[in-house]
Length: 146
Image (spheres, rainbow, N blue to C red):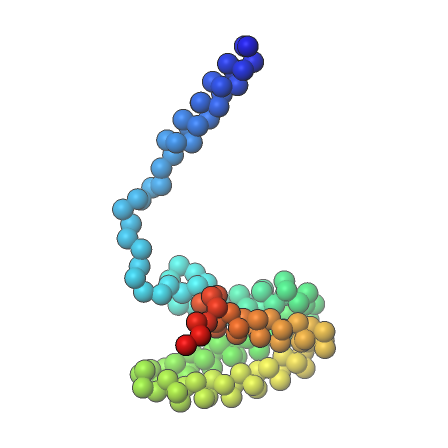
C-alpha cells in the first residue's frame, strides 16, 4: 500500500512539474509567407548553401575527404551562379529566362559531379534527385494532380 501511494505521489509531482513549464512566447504570430527551409528565414550565402549541400551529400553518399573538397567547390560555383542569375533576372516576368539558364547550369554541374563521384554514388545521387522531384521540388509534399 505504501509503495502505490509513493508511486502515485511521485507521478503527481512529475505531472505538476511538467505542466508548469510553458513556452516563452505564446503570442508569437507565425509568418504568412514561406520561410527559407535551411535556416531562420534568412537567405543563406552561397558558401552556407555549398557547405549544407556538401554535408548532406557526404552523409548520404559517404564521400571521401577528397570528394568532399571537390563537391564543395562544385556546389559553391553552382550557388554563386544561381545568386548571380537571381540578380540578373529579378522580376517575376523574367522567371522563364532565369529558369532556362539555371537548367543549363544544372546540366554542367551534374557532369562535374559525375566526374567526381563513383558510379554507385552518382546513381544514388540521381535516385535522390528523382525522389525529391517527385515529392515536389521544395515543398516536400506530393504535387497535386490537376
